[in-house]
Length: 220
Image 1 (tube, one colour):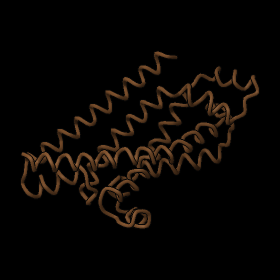
Image 2 (tube, helix red, strand yellow):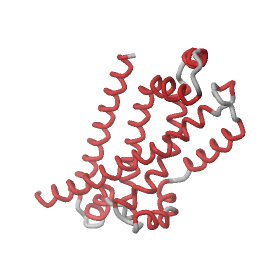
Image 3 (tube, one colour):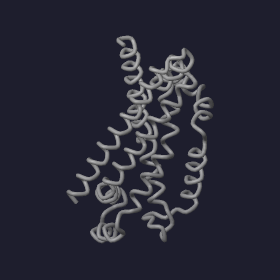
């Protein structure tokens, strides 16, 4: 039991590192893209600086990246992982494709959340002479924050699933534990423990995300 606990504990720590690091990097990549998608949308769709051509090109790039199956994307990004972290296997290497895979998803979540902001609030900010940057920083993001928190929660849950999937090709974490120690070594107890931990992580993340979002809504 002690060995099983040690294995699961180490794999859980690896999964948490992968998930939260890739969440941070995907937000860094996806947030500006999502804001740009929203701001440059045609005026009829609420864009405050309409640039239909740029919006269309950016939207298509995001859609293409979102359509890539994660396993294939991870294999394609092996060379990039090797350049950035010096290896293409393990926890550190998996953060690179996880971040890139989640960034388009984050961008769409950001775009959708910001588009839910009331046009009246934006018009009021404009009438007071606010610049585009000020509208984004002081109006759009704060007003969309509850929806953004829900979107980040969904992103983390998806990344937990992606990180487990990455174990199939040496990504480390709970997925790797379930495959190498559970499936290949005929250890159903290891597989069961891995699945239970993944389910618990998802439930905890969802619960915390819902509570934070609800509190933000209550303060508005």
